[in-house]
Amino acid sequence: MGEHGVSPGLATVGPVSGWAVERYDSRHVWLGALTLFLTGSVLCGLAWNVGSLIAFRVLQGIGGGLLLPVLQTLVMRAAGGRSLGRLMAAITLPVMVVPILGPVLGGLIVGHLSWRWIFYVNLPVCLLALALAWRGVPKDTPRLGLATLVYGLSETGVARASAIPVGAVLIALFARHALRVRDPLVDLRLFQDRAFALSSLLAFLNGLTLFGGMFLLPLYYQQVRGEGVIAAGLLLAPQGLGSLLARVTGPLTDRLGPRPVVVAGMLLCALGTLPFLFPHPGAALLAVALVVRGLGVSAANMAVMVGAYQGLDRARIPHAGTSIRIVQQVGGGVGTAVLATVLAHGHGGTAFPHAFAWATAFTVVACGVGLCLPVRVASAELPS
Image (tube, rainbow, N blue to C red; front, side):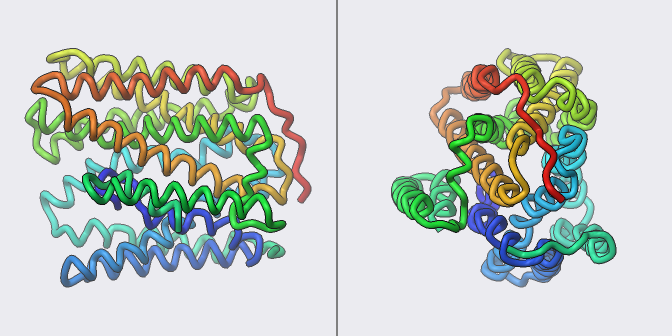
């Protein structure tokens, strides 16, 4: 991954997922993505130097970048527009919990085993997923500028100064082309739908909050509170508990619509971040704050995804999944870049409080955008 947890490899392949699902059997795209991720994981574990590890991580990133958007497409199409909140809770829960609990597992592996096992641990999971997908996933009837920008956001100095404007220009050229052709790689016309456009903006802001927190919190525990890698990972585990609790908000989103759940989730995230702004908060207070923060971020993320898919017809679902993931990845790159800059220019004991204040401000802005969502988006049943 990139320095701050956002991978240019994932950003590169993300836009391809909707195009691939439309032109090939989505079952084969899913199986192919799993196979690439599995192969890349094995090769990363066998890497003999830094160069080979980077090359194999690119391969792993190609597979990993396809997995979630293709999975969302498969599930949303199968759902036919029904119970999107419950389904999104099931889909996004691992995505929210694993990055939060990852430092715990990673710290334990690095502390007690070889670093190669960070990659080998993927093998049994991927093999099980391949077996289940081969038997259970139905067949469908088939129908580089972003990476440069994300790379620039994840780097510093000259690399950032040159990559960001180049990436922005390439994205602008792509947008101009996509709006002119009939069947673009990414369907930008989706953003003409008010609910989808607002959900995409919220996905961007949620990416700021999620990836920004993933960047800040481990550093806080290690640099401010003097904890080791394993201890810091264990102290972050309550955030994973909060994400698990957020699963109950899926049915709530189905009943009330995305808007109240998004706003409540972002408010909880802001509340859970506030204790980190003050000097020497107690360990028990921080643990409770992390539970609240994890609950808020995960609940908001699920509701945002529901808002993005509601009301879309079957043909637009692959492109919707692609677009929403792109926006969230870019939000993560921007969030980590902003918070890294705040930390780098901070002074002494004020650096982390200022950075957490910025993180809190992101969530406040997201609350304002969330209030603009429709009260309830029409969720017409999708054709099977």
